[in-house]
Every structure is written in structure tokens, then in C-alpha cells.
Length: 118
Ligand SMILES: Nc1ccn([C@H]2C[C@H](O)[C@@H](COP(=O)(O)OP(=O)(O)OP(=O)(O)O)O2)c(=O)n1
Image 1 (cartoon, rainbow, N blue to C red):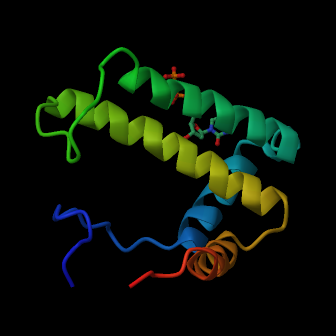
Image 2: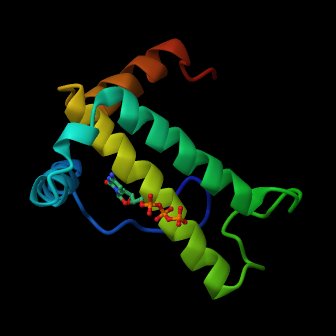
């Protein structure tokens, strides 16, 4: 099926559960679980959203697909966007929430709220 945004971007098929397990192990072996309270993870997440925002700050509007960005800039973007995802996964885990299920349920709810008009 054609991507709705006409770009050919594809995601590697990594599950949220795989990320959750890897991150839980990463924190466990470093004895960092005591720092990973929901509040601390939320603050860390917001900090990373700030770092992600900085990449776009002052650039003006940018084209979808970022055709004019250097590989270095795209690599930096990949790192910061990943930091946001990784803290989000850890936050959901620390809250005892199934993030994948919650996101799928929310997409269904969104479709009901915003039905197709023809
Ligand atoms: N207590 C911690 C510290 C880090 N990380 C992980 C999640 C993020 O993916 C990444 C964040 O690491 P840094 O705080 O070093 O942030 P940056 O990678 O953005 O580095 P910098 O802020 O120097 O650009 O490491 C984590 O899970 N728990």
C-alpha cells in the first residue's frame, strides 16, 4: 500500500515490547531502576523533546522527507527522536501501561472521533 505521505519511508519492524525489555535490562544492570520513577522519566522525556525541538529551531519550515538536510543532521535527528521514544517506552513501563495496546486503541478512538466525510 502506498504511504499516505508519498514518501517511501519504512520502519524496521521492532516491537515496543522488544524495546521495553532491552531498556529494562539496560537500567537493571546499571542499578538505575531507583531513578526511573514515572515522574523522573517524564521529566527526562520532556528534556529530550526539548533537544529534538532544538534541531528544528530557527530553521523555518522544512520539507517532508528533509531532502536538503545533511547525513549528519539526519543522524542527529535520529538520535534525539529515539531518545524521546526510549523514555516514552520506559515511562509507559514504569506506569504499568501496555503502550502498544493503548496506542492501537487510541487510533480506533481517533477514527471514531474524526470519521471520513464523503
Ligand atoms: N538514567 C538514564 C540515562 C540515560 N538513559 C538513556 C535513555 C536515552 O536514550 C539516553 C539519554 O542519555 P543522555 O542523558 O546522555 O542524553 P543524550 O544522549 O541526549 O546526550 P546529550 O544530552 O549529551 O546530548 O540514555 C536512560 O534510559 N536512563
